[in-house]
Image (cartoon, rainbow, N blue to C red):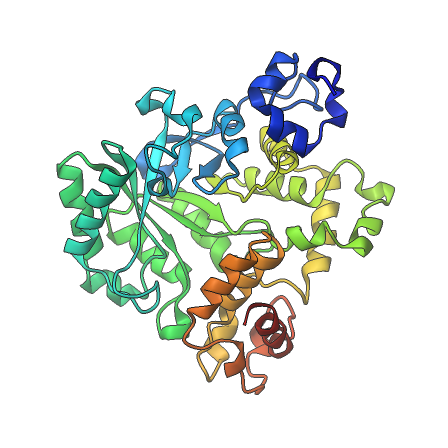
Length: 405
């Protein structure tokens, strides 16, 4: 089919990937929002990322985004790139490189050393050298954002180990990094603290300027509260793991049949979730996994509208009902009841990679690194009362082990 004869409503993902944004533009079609009305603005909303002062897109990008989508993301205004240190001069997208360097922000993730995010340590000199080596590999002169990846194990560790902060400060003096943020997980499975407790301390007592944190529809009140507190203190927030159960939900025939009811017309689970995120005045931005043009069109279109309507709320309520008993909120409350100290929430996070993001290899790799996996469960049932999502944790651990083990 010749491009000049295409009907925008009939364009497939394969055609999109083969032709690219330039081809669609040549056909007289908006390469981001074809199929939507011209009233939808092209650019994503921009928001101030807390104390960093950076004006970033409400949906940020990541180096693992499907390459064909990156030019469209840039055109839509995406200007913050998570895990940018994974690019080399050869793999960095031309759509980004063609812009003035000061118009976009590149983030490096700095992990613990000599182990994973549970077993590894914080060590100033190694983090300092890691960033310098990453700059050489990436071909960049500097990273805008230095991110302490996975965060601290406890408030006590924040108080006693300033290695990550000192590494950042040395690099900042050399003009190699500009802003200090972190992503933060729960660590009660290893005797540490919950993310929201650690964050409250960080906001008030450290030079960190922002955080990437678990935040999805139905988030525990403690996470809602820490996001609100962060806003009050001008501490930046970016939501991650936002699309709770949506990957499997949209493929479920029973749910699809339910959503055909006229009550749900005008919205879809992903669209409603993005609007919920964007309508939260305390949240600065979100990172959302997108594998296809259809997902990008839906997510960006929803972000551009931002407001949450009654039909969206009905869809979210139906999605919550679908997820109840099935999809983990990653709140980690169950872990505090587990006599075996199994990282239940992380195991269910890996299940999300497999079931919702369709990244089975990644999920199996992460699962294989656990000291204790689903087979460590002794079926005592102590965890069950702590689950706000009403999941049969004992049975689900067996199922996830069958999938990933």
